[in-house]
Length: 257
Image 1: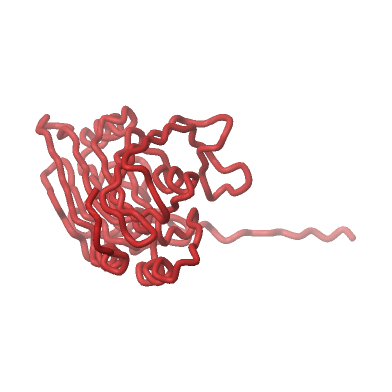
Image 2 (image 1 turned 90 degrees about the vertical axis):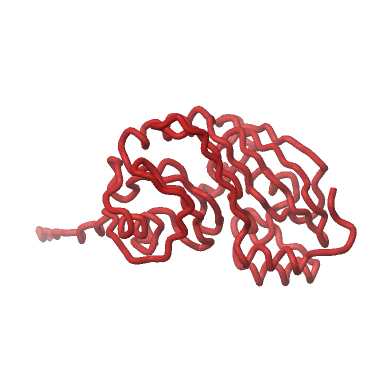
């Protein structure tokens, strides 16, 4: 009785990104922006559980200071999930950052992804849904919500594989996990997706997913008007080796659609 307990919690860890000498695949660079081909497994910016070793740490080392009010996310105008590979643009100046943010918000950016979808997918299909937090799992998103933002994904079948399909997904909007949600809720989840995936009984699918170790999703195309010069820019990159290896494991004669 009468005792007083004083609790002094430890200060939160520093959130400012620091330069680190990490591999970086630069597709394009000028004084205003960078376009990189992000490796699968690389987190875009520091966050809880990933204080360093990110794309931002690598860019700071190779190119110096980046603009932005958030010290953990300088230069970042859009993101790819850690398990997603492919092309990303990063702003190097405040003018470029502000204009790119505006264009992403206005959906004035060309973005196309390649994915391996489990099961069957129509030759062409458009998913046009609401998009919001999953009502029971806050780590996930869903199109089956009463309120949310509009999400539109155009899907085209590229090649029929064993118990799966290689698809090209073009984004009309760019919501968090949008492609992963749309395909999963259409019962054709992305191969190896740890959050939305539904493991199939087919042994070849299981083997390919295990070999890949991530979701089979690759940002293949990024196109936009340069935020300062007005030049039309378009970048396209083939999937990395792990994605191509999974494709080879699922190839079968007949194909091209």
